[in-house]
Image 1: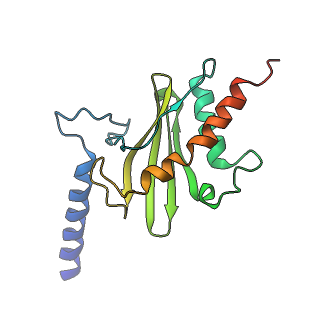
Image 2: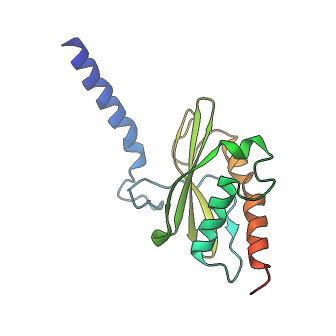
Amino acid sequence: MKTLVAVAILAAVCIGCNTSTVAPQNDTRPVSADGQVLNRIPGTDPIEIPQGVSDVQALDVVESVIRGTNPGDRVNHWVSQWRLEARDPANKWIRIGLTARSHYLCVCYRIEGGKLIPDVPTSTNLKQDGIRIHRKVPVWINNLKPLIAQRFYDLANAPRK
């Protein structure tokens, strides 16, 4: 009986922890298709999508960087810690995750206004409270920007067949 009570208390605490990811009625932050609040972290930079690059191609670029499909993509150890988690071309977003030791960071890149905008719906062991989060998180997210921007440049300037 004590075990059952302990499980019930743990479940209630876990459910209570997840309530911070649901937007209050007057919250203007964007919400993902599954209802998670997308937190725009200060210090993270959106990435311009070049003219002529479609939304699907933009998502392909992010996926190819995370998967490391070009030579040199996985030279940096930190790139290999990112994983593709989900992709929804119809709603113009791709979700990737970073695992480093006991830390986990979920980043959702959404396409809006000709830019890839990084949002952080959730994290573990990174002291996240809405848009407040561990000071290194913007650095980790911005480390992907040069790789993605270079891939956009290569795609936009590729010879037309």
